[in-house]
Length: 116
Image 1: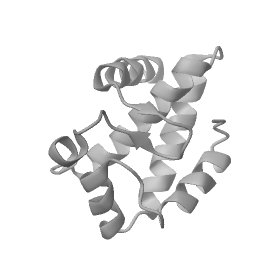
Image 2: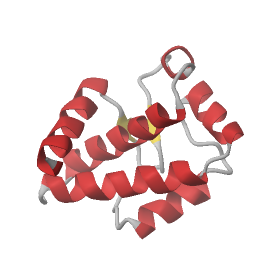
Image 3: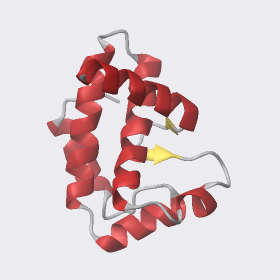
Image 4: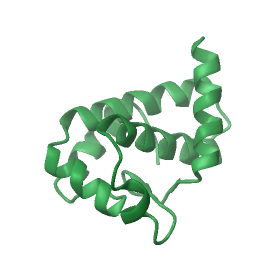
């Protein structure tokens, strides 16, 4: 079941087409953050962060895809668990982590052993 979910996460991530840019957090396609992210629930924000992580890891990794899907899940859960409502709103508005969220994201990346 985990394998099916991780494959589904990779497929979903590819459809969403969010790529990371070497910073913690995903970057939406140009001009879409305000429109497409505005009504996301906190769970959908977590999934968006997970998708961006999986796409970034998939593009540069040759390791087992289940392994980085699990690490990305760890990362997304950790960072969103620490985000305040204002930080979620900032993410929804821009598609980026707020400056106050970046250290949390960096710590989550390290804790979940995700290399950038």
